[in-house]
Length: 220
Image (tube, rainbow, N blue to C red):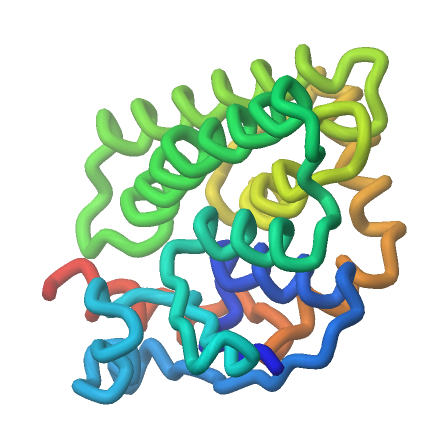
């Protein structure tokens, strides 16, 4: 049995999507970011960084894994799906997973902060992170040319990247002129497991409550 500690964020949805795709039993432990559950001593014992998501694999003696990319690799290896076994195929998927982890996530995350959450509007920062995120989207667009998914076959690279690109409007990212990206988003939304994964622990609501939460977080 897997316990998933998570919140309704792109990083949290990466793991819930994979668990739904795998169809394995798991239980959800919602983490309230507004209440700073992720900073409580009990949680820091399994995730020293105080972020989400985290999993605990009870089949392995309560083994904890934190960092969303590491969790995806762990689960894909454990269940033998969504990560190729051959060296080149495995490397290709991990390269695109790292592209999301080091590029799309951090840059779009900063776009979110400055465009939506920061108490004051600082246009140079907004422009910088929105433009860089758009540039990264064009890299995805090129990679998707002639492919249904980022690495040909559906993989953890798609599951990692999709939840971020899916909220492009919230981040103020222009996706016009990116037909391959639009088709890929539609393809991902057509997967029932993806739809279920996006509802864990509850549907993401982009409203003023998120603004209030984010303003608290950026001042810590």
